[in-house]
Length: 135
Image (cartoon, rainbow, N blue to C red):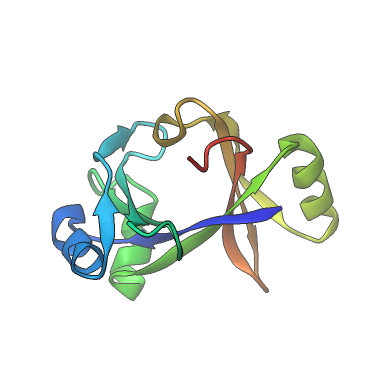
């Protein structure tokens, strides 16, 4: 697994992205993910260095991100890792007591590459994404 990005739950992508833009990041187009019922955009450092940040805002109160925002406000939501073999990585993480939150499914934000979410009480929520989406 290789680090890919950190996901930040936020109320308003446009407002939250202003911080990153002011600090040398560029914002991608916002897309809607119907599976998670969220709007998503990425903020990438213009120099190519540093962490990619995914801003995630709920479309409505049925989004799983809402509970996190109600409890914590704008805050880190997940850490994403890319992997060349999603099934093998999921199997390895399950052996380490990670629980599957969502099964692998195509993601709009990654051009149809599959993602899934797992949770561990000692690590928190992680997202796995298939290799080849880091461009």
